[in-house]
Amino acid sequence: MIVRFKVPENLPFPARTVLGAVQMALKIKRRAAEVVIHEGGVTCRGKPLIQTHLRLEVGDTLDIDYAPQPVRQPKSRGSSQDRFEIVFDDDTLIVVNKPAGLLTVPTPKREPNTLQSQIRKWLERQQPGAQAVCVHRLDKLVSGLLVFAKSFEAADLIRSQFEARKPQRLYSAIVAGVPKESKGTIRSYLSTDKDLTRRSSDDPSQGELAITHYRVKEAWDGVALLEIKLETGRRNQIRVHMAEIGHPVLGDPRYHRLSAEHPLWPYERIALHAETLAIIHPITQDDLRFIAPWPQEFRDLRKRLRPRDN
Image (cartoon, rainbow, N blue to C red):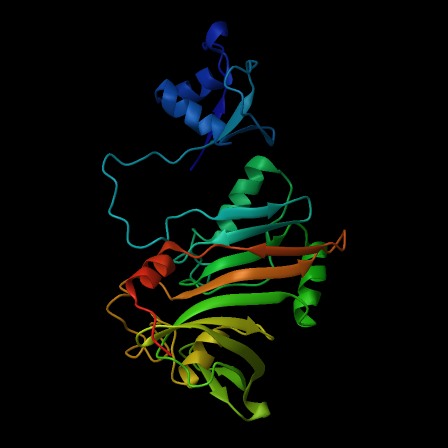
């Protein structure tokens, strides 16, 4: 929540600092106030105040972003409370590693906590005036790399790259079973039914063209690790195509759900991770390439499954 505090005359001069004002406004101890300040939670006229000793004048108005901690922390259910990781940041764009369990953008239900809302809040503190324009998305239960533009103009330039199929997008996926072919390409047309489930068809009149390339990197006991390259970027594309060839992504609750269950994958997420993203910087024209390390769930499963003998 945002607490607005106007420095009063009765705040004595020695305590008329950012630290003293935050303590008075929130009625919290010194250490807690220092955390709020150092994490960029205090602004004055849109400018972050990150120095605790900075002196204030009577009448200065502070906006304090403060989320009081409950006395007893609720038990976490998955990683939806994890914050995003910044991979790259400049004046034009920001690239982040999204945790599984966090929506990229709000749905029509207007969820308050999304990746976009978190990035916007961070930018309000660190770079006032910067936008957080979504260029492409990942499903809620999928982790990995996403780029957000800081202006509508930059967003249009980056989107044009995606429309031209220029960005390289490589995913790591753990699927049920081991494909007979070590590599392959799936091409179909995707449509959406009334329940928002995607349907695949060979008929061009039935939907959007979707092209997915896959390669088996490792084969384990009844499970395979795939490298997946997207040529097009349709919603649920990888999940639909993998289920279509009989190898659904582990943990997928929608596409071949029962086949996607595995005793060593109890997590409330899909075993799909956007690992590599390569784009051209829309302003400098530099080639940018980013890699997000595997989530811990991937590493743990790999340790527990014995590689299959070929």
